Length: 315
Image 1: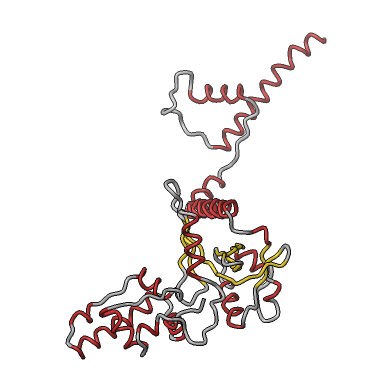
Image 2 (image 1 turned 120 degrees about the vertical axis):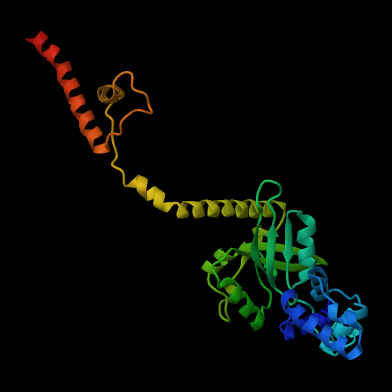
């Protein structure tokens, strides 16, 4: 299936995200409003969902009314041409819309957002009712299975550059290999950090990047991905708290450690210091070093007293 001319023009003009596209879209609407006297054109807005549908490359509908006028002015083509298969356009290497729809419909806790022109986007994974949920960067990659591995399928120079740019940042991300087979899609997933460790792709090493065929994205694999991303977020949150409280931990680590030889010696020391009727609130504070010295002396005296009777009986 060939991509629409509109989606190709978006990529050519670097208008592949909703935020960027809305700037010339609204400006063109105001310009047309001044020329035609139609004030409604000056207030036309575009929703993110509508833009994602238009830019998917596989939507062949027809925008109408003011939206159609703005698009025809921006790109110089009627909407019938903009949202038809582009002339001489090759088949999309990765069916972006199909992948996002497949993942979102199969797993309700998951949604994939891929801007027009792809292949990189965001994979949002919700935490249901107990966890906060998280998101990760995602890169779609056309692959073909060869035995126990799946490898990039005729990755172009632009594709190699896109993949290298995706792997360069040290962040959480996933590579999703997409293989079209008999009208269906087989998806494979690999964590970006492991792919980065195996070597960044380039003109000489793109062929070495592979995904084990066992990483087929089925219910079990998705469950593992879901659990590990939620766990990773929890650990990162704990690390952040520990780092922010590091100064308190260092205070406790600087204290002198006190080793009490036995509980009887410790209790005797407590009675000697505060008396039998002392309460916990009224106990005086004893320096750790002083406690250690006192416990040591008390223990030595107890040991001498225990040895004395034995010595007399032997004599």
